[in-house]
Length: 365
Image (cartoon, rainbow, N blue to C red; front, side, top):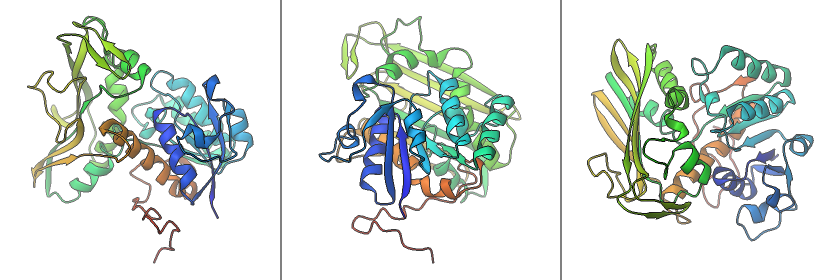
C-alpha cells in the first residue's frame, strides 16, 4: 500500500521533492501547503513542472494539510530565516500523529548541543504524544556532511581529522532570500549577510559537527568560526539580479569542531558568483560546483562528489539530491520509533524501489 504523503513548501527543494512524490508509486500525494498566495489552488503537477493533473491543489498554511491525515509530511518550508516557526510547524505535525521528513528546521538534524534543551524536549514530547518521528536532512548540512564521511571513515584504521567542503558557483541559484538576506551577496562589504552574524555559522553547521563527533565517539570542546569576503570587480548578473561592483561576490567560511585544542571536524564553504573570483581559494572538481570529503588518517582520503542532472545545472542537481535524500527516507521514518531520528540511527538507505522500470519495491531477503 502506498504511503500517504503531504508536502509543505514549494520552493526550490519542495518543488523537486514534489516531482518525486507524484511520480514514485511508493507514495500517494494527498495534500500540499504553501505560503505563497499565487500558488494557492494550483495543481501539484503544475507546481512540480509536470504536464499532468493530479487533482491535488495547494492550500495556504498547515491546517488543510494535517486535516488530510497523511502518514508523513514532507516539510520543505524556509527554515533559515524562520527557525522558530518551522520548529513549531514540525511539532504541531508530530503531535497530530504525522511523521515528518524535511529540510527544516536545520537544528533538528542533530539537535543535542545545537538547540536549547527545552526546545528538544518539546519536540520529543510531541513525537511521543503522536507516536511519530521526524528526520531533517539535506545535502550540506546533510548527506555530504554525515552519511558520506561516515561511510568513508568506516574504512580507516586511524582518523586525525574529517573535513567536508562545498565549493560552488551560486550565480544560477534562484533563491533571493538565501542569496541576499542569508548569505549577503550584493551587500556592501561591511554589511555581511545573516549567516555571518556571530554564532550563526556555528548554529547552522553545529549539527553536522556534533553528529560527526557522536559517530566518532568524541566530545567537541568548542566550535569556532571564521569567514572572508571578496568584492565583485564589476557588475555581475546572477539569477536573482545584479551583484554590483564593489559588493560581496565571493565568500569563504569555516566552522571547526575543536577536540583537545585541535580542529578535528571541519566544515568549509567556498561560494562564488563567478568562477574566476578568488582563484586562490579551493576550486571545485567539476565546472560549477562539487562537494568534498577529506579524511586525514590511515588511510587518508580526498573524495569529490559531483552531482549532475539532465534537467539542470550543478545547483539544480544539488537541490535534487537533497530532495531525493528527504523523500527516500520516508518509509524508514514512518517505520521508526517515535522521536527525533538522525543518520546515526536510521537504517542505511540503499535506493530500494528506484531502479528505472522496476519501481515496485521487492521484499527484503
